[in-house]
Amino acid sequence: MPTGPAPFPDTPAPSPSARPARWQRPVHLFPGQGDFSVSSLVHAARATPGLRTAVREVFEEVDAVAAERGLSQLGPWLLGPKPPSGRDLALAATGTAQLALFGASMAVHRALNEAYGTPTAAVGVSFGEIAALTAAGVFGVGDGARAAHDLAVVLASCPGGLTALTCSERSAHDLLEEAGAVEAVVAVVNDERSVVVAGPVAALGLVEKAAMDRQVATVRLRLPFSSHHPALGRAAEEFAAAVRAYPRSGARFPVHSAVAGRRYGPTDDLAARLADCLVRPAAVPPVFRQVMAYRPGVLFEAGTGGALASSARGVLAAALDPAPPVRAPLTEPGFPW
Picture 1 (cartoon, rainbow, N blue to C red):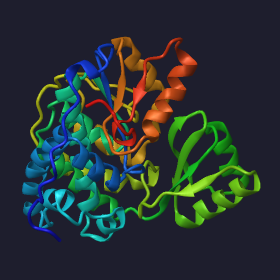
Picture 2 (picture 1 turned 90 degrees about the horizontal axis):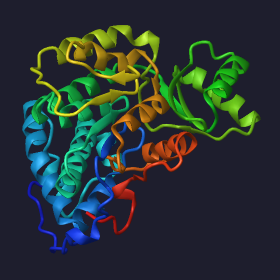
Picture 3 (picture 1 turned 180 degrees about the vertical axis):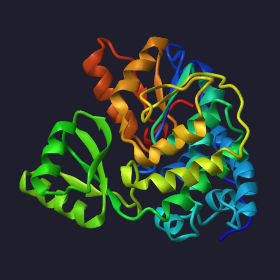
C-alpha cells in the first residue's frame, strides 16, 4: 500500500459565474453502504482541486483514527498512484471500507460547502447518519470516524445479507410471504420502485427465487452482513455503548433520519438512535418530503454514487411541481464545482 500521496496536475476550478446561482439553500444527502464507488472518488479528486484538497484534509483526521485502531492509512492510498479498488477495501482489515466511505462523504460535503455554502439541512440514510451528524458538527471528524469503525466491528458479527429488489414496499412484503422467508424483512424503502430486504442468506435465496419467478430484478448487495433487522438487538446495544463514549455538540443545521423518520432534536439519545439503524427499517421518501420545508434550491448527494439522488428525483417529482434539482456530483462529468 502506498505511504505517500502523489501529486496530480492542477486543473483550473470553474469560475464562480459557472456555478448556477439558483443552487441556494442546498440539502445534502448522505447515503448508506450499498452505493460506494471508490473509482468515482479517485477520478473526481484527480480532476477537481477543491475536492482533492477536501479529501486530503478529511483523511488526515480519519487516518489518525485508523492508526489508533491498527489500520493502514487511507488518504495516501486513495490519492496515490495505485489507488484501491472496492475489492481491495473489502479485503482489507475490518473497518477499512467503512472509514473510506465515511471519509468520502465528509470530503464531498466539505467540497460542496466551499462551492455552494453550508447546507440548510441534511438527510442521513443508515450508515450515512454518522456522516450527516458529523457534517452538522454533532461529532468531530475523529469521533465520527471512530463511530464508523465501531459500527464496522459490530456489523462483522451480524450474519446474513441484504438484497435489493426493484419493486414497491407492498410488492416486497408479498414476495416475502410468497417465498415463505419468515426470517427476512423489508429493511430499506428507497422509493416506489426500490427496496432492500435483510435476513439470513438462506432466506434471501428464497426471496430472490420468488422475485425471479415474478420477473422482479434483484441484486445481492456486496456487503457481508445483515442490517435493519430486529434480530440484531445485541449488536445494536454494543454499538450504542461505544457511541455514548463520544462527546456531542449542538447541530449547526437540521439532520433528518430515514430510520427515525424525522429531524433529530437536542433531547435525542443519538447513540440509541444511531443503533436503531441496526434493528429498525429505513424509509427514505418521507424525509425527502420533510426537507422540502426548508425550500431548498438543490439537493446534493454527499457520497460517491447516485442511487440516493435518483430516489430523491423520483419521490420529489411525484410530490412537487416543479421539484428542485437533485445532483450527484461524483457521477456527473463536468459538475460545476
